[in-house]
Image (cartoon, rainbow, N blue to C red):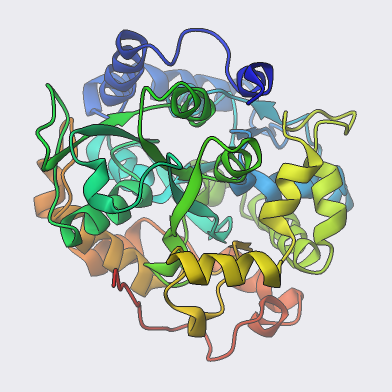
Length: 408
């Protein structure tokens, strides 16, 4: 194992427990009405000073951000007549949320459960306008793990409490008869869950400070490449065609600049359609050799995620990482329509998921109301039709679907 390759993906002290706790507490404070107020006031001042602000993208260097970065690289926003600044790369979810709430960026990808916490926990006027991708995450564990029971008495990292990762992981652990805790030392039948930035997970696994993590790509692929971890289960093999990160924008822009907002979404949807048919080119766009320096990832790592491999799929089927081969899931795919059934299912699952922080608001949420109130699908439907309809994204059956969530 090359220690320097591991450290390429990590910097600073975010991997230390105290630093992680500070980041969580900071984000928790932002997602309360009182904590968000100063940032929202700053955002209103920014809009007043710059009502025609250019496209300002905020992202984390994970493959979930692919459509935003490809749209910028391929100049789709400019082709729509928009002014766009170079995308701003952030290290943690707390950083990107702070910048978004303060109006420093206006187009971001966020964990879908995080948008629920944002809108209903802090009353932040933000809306989901499209899915950024589907699938794209895995549970990765140490090579020595032979059964889920081996995770008992150890620590597993999640990117955030409000994440599809946390929901799926807890469902997997429950099936194995394991419990989960957030503080103290776990018993042999317990798994300690800790929040960790994606870039810190790989070094923590490599040094065996954790026994596994569940996160977006390409950190799972990199663990495979370096031999420090193996994919135990794909999240898309538990929740079929699920979204993880979604495109989030300020509600004020959608209301006051609808033409601008439509053009932004047009560019993102166009990028998703392009990526589906240009995966090899997408690898090069995202790779560290690109002068734009969108991500620090090697082409070989990104290729494991973006390029299909029948050989690897057969190995995953044999190991149990894939149990539902008939679903024909991609390791990551790009389908922009935010199905209401998904949002409703997500709200229902969150109500039964252990999360830290202020979560009383979850009990009051009506899934059908959230699907209509949180998501503004006007722009993405128009953009999808401009690309030839849902069939351009490999979807048949229209703008409704049923959710499939199966652990076994």
